Amino acid sequence: MLMDQDLILRIAAALERIAPPTLEKGIPDAPACVWQQGRLSAAVGFRATPLNLLFGIDLQKAAVLENSRRLAAGAAAHDILLWGARGAGKSALVKSVVAEIQAQGGALRLVEAACDDLATLPTLFGLLAQSEMPTIVFIDDIGFEQGDPQMRHIRSVLDGGISARPPQVRLYVTANRRHIVPRNLDEQASAINPRDAVDDNLALADRFGLSLGFHACTQDVWLDMVAGYARHLGLDFDRQEALTWATQRGARSGRMAWHYAVELAGRAGKTL
Image 1 (tube, helix red, strand yellow):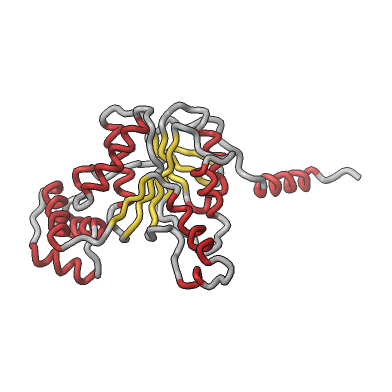
Image 2: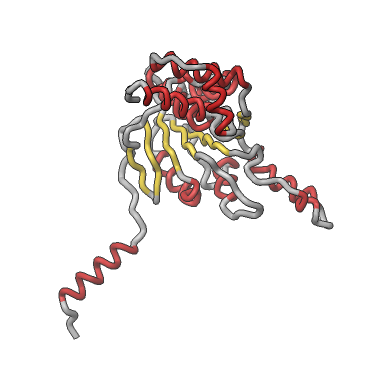
């Protein structure tokens, strides 16, 4: 029995909707890209905070910049875990370092991948392996619960398994927890070998060559951050008001300093 043509078209459209996304054939010629649902596309409007505006994290800044310069030059470089306080500048630092190296003529690409796409990392690495361009694959705000099966995807690419990243690609990851996986007393609950549970939870963080901590800043550093943004924007600010702003929000961080700078710019009728 012949099928109605309209029915055939509807079936074809339905199959198209449920089919898995296909890979783009090439890698976009862009300074920053986004990997999402099996597709690599250019990041629209990629903007990074100037590196000299990131205050209070000088040691972390120097370490990430040096490692990234090595990668861009084709030398040995580490995978990096940036962990610590919210709003302390972890993700901003990664983007700023890449932009700084690119501005200096270095060959370095940034690819941001979401935590939901960890299972597709081998596919991404297979695509990036076709290019000699040094690349940082950036995963922001990662975190796993005890026994999360997704942990194996990160372990595999860091451990040199069959889905390991190419030699010109390094993984930069940010997390609020030092060990990525939460630690608790249940680790000691096993009567067989509690050390195995502890080692298993620490193993992921230990696979990063560099682990850099970011901590809540002091009052003086907070004011330096605000002053730096104010100078950059050509604005004045009141020291006591800046401290009150941080107190009301319960945090002193680079993110809060930028929010206060936006407030100052808005009052002055400036655009950012």
